[in-house]
Image (cartoon, rainbow, N blue to C red):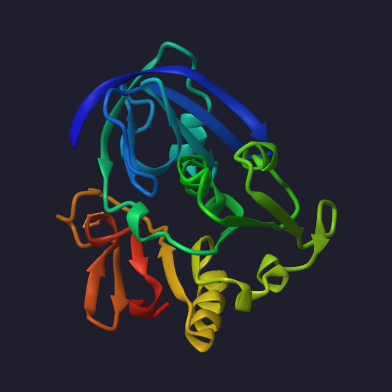
Length: 242
Ligand code: FES
């Protein structure tokens, strides 16, 4: 993990409020890890935690949603601008532990880190479930991983109308991996516990330092408070109290 300056290769809009930034970085991250990204020259001063959406040939791809001033500024940054990146950070998914039939369930921008996981685990017996409110993105990328992809939208504009959690036949799976809103992950965790299925959840939290120093990202677990940035963002779901 190190801080470095990185050049923006591309920064494009992929859907309303959703952008994809591609950066030059030299360290290959593990799926589930994240970077703290910060503008220079007053572009935006607080670093933003963004999960790894993809990595190939020394290029890091970050898919992010505009959720405030910092990410709005980030979306306006042009090619060849330099940003400061710190990472890769946090514990990613334990790829060795992913065995047997696995359901990968993402909600909204929580689908972003799951693409790199699905791509790196092309040979795994994995089904992908993607849930969105109304605006969808990256579906084709997931389909290109070769895994089966099921999409649900709350307004029914794409795929099944309703919540993606209702599309999953949990009894088919040995393991579930999820990332998305707490309310969605909470429901999935409770279902997995009832069905005695292994469950791993990647949490999203506001972060200030990203390295375990400020305690600003603490989450409650059955083993006491844990820092999402340092002890996660991937947790055994059975440990979490969401
Ligand atoms: Fe500072 Fe996690 S963001 S401890």
